Amino acid sequence: MKKQIQILIIALSVIVAFVMVADAQGGWRPLESGTDTYLFDVAFANDSIGIAIGSGTTIVRTIDGGQNWTLNFLDLEALNYSADMAEGGRGAIIIGGAIARTIDAGVTWNLIIDEIGGYFDIEFLDNNIAGAVGCNAISIPRLTLSTDGWSTYSDTAFYIEHEGNWHSGSFRGIGYADSNNICMAGIALDIASDMGAIVRSTDGGGSWSTVYWNWHLLLDIDFPSPATGYAVGTEGFIVKTTDGGANWDSLRSGVEVILWSLSLIDDMTGIVVGEGGKIIGTTDGGQTWISQESGTSVALRGVEMLSPNVAYVAGDSGTILYTENGGWPSEDCDYAVGDINGDGSANGIDVTYGVRYFKGGSAPPDSCDCPPLAFPFYAAGDVNGDCVFNGIDITYYVAYLKRLQPVLRYCADCPPLGYITNKIIKTIKRGDE
Image 1 (spheres, rainbow, N blue to C red):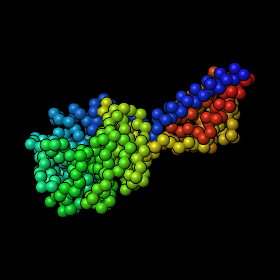
Image 2 (image 1 turned 120 degrees about the vertical axis):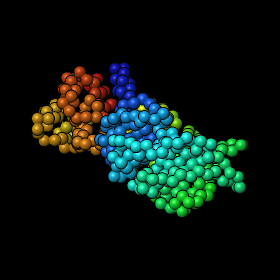
Image 3 (image 1 turned 90 degrees about the horizontal axis):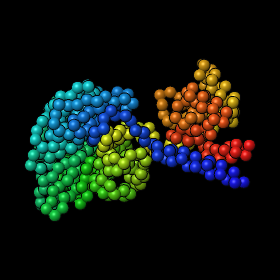
Image 4 (image 1 turned 90 degrees about the vertical axis):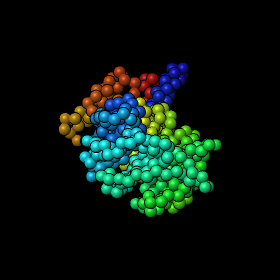
């Protein structure tokens, strides 16, 4: 009896370890960026081509959806704060008080503005309409607009008005509801306390009015549609509009850290990132925000959603994270670990079946879609837990059958239904023998 109890305790310890791995993995995976510098933003032109930018005028670029990144530098003494890319190869980044433009999806960059002051955000509405925001050398909030993809631009600076008083400060984010309706979120400097503000234009940037004022500083803004927009800031603050930016209401984020950036793919679905590795997501239009496991504690400063499932995050220490399921933990897959031939059990016949498959025979009957790969992932055959089905698994399987390995292991991204219970039974049964 004592032997059974000891074996059960060991089995439960193994299970807890596997569960912790699965939880820590969550729905986000780290990508190798090739740099350990601060990364402030990430932007993609399409599903494959993207850039991340950071301190030391660092640019890393990918052409394969983030699997590989190439390191590049701009010859400027400033920090890269923001980036955005449009279809057709156009894109732009801000470097301190400068703006650089690309027309070949980030292969080359040309400096188009280089002035004293600073920009903090840049945004494309489409291939032509774009804007950048920040402040000038004397802390007057600044806006630069283009209607031809940054071939030409217009520049303006103005104080933020509130109740008859005019405030210096800086705009930290720009969001386009459409070509006429534009909102900027930022920080208004005040003698008593700095304040968060949102200003709005309904004539394409010709005139502006302050539509929101709060003691939470606002750091980014995004419009997934002409009516709906969100802004984020300090102490977990999130506000939302449903009328194109005319009115804003606060939402409960459930966190109290600085929220640096957000990206919404539609009115209902979005991701917000911030200090301490914090990622929160919503699928109900911001009514609820649920924390997602990022696997890191560094500050996360930029996020880009390409679809309800695919998103990238950039942060300190060269961090780039990637998800193909919206950042949510993968759902369990209906398979049995080691059941390569699909007969409901795991035994030596499965090894034979697996060997035949690698020699050109029939594929295993079930292919689980997690983790998403460019080729089918036959989860039942992955018995060593490395999230790949290959010849190493056959070797591991044989070692298991010879009692040289204690358990068949599953991919932490792809936990099978009911396997934890099966593992307890199987381990105890082996001990009784």
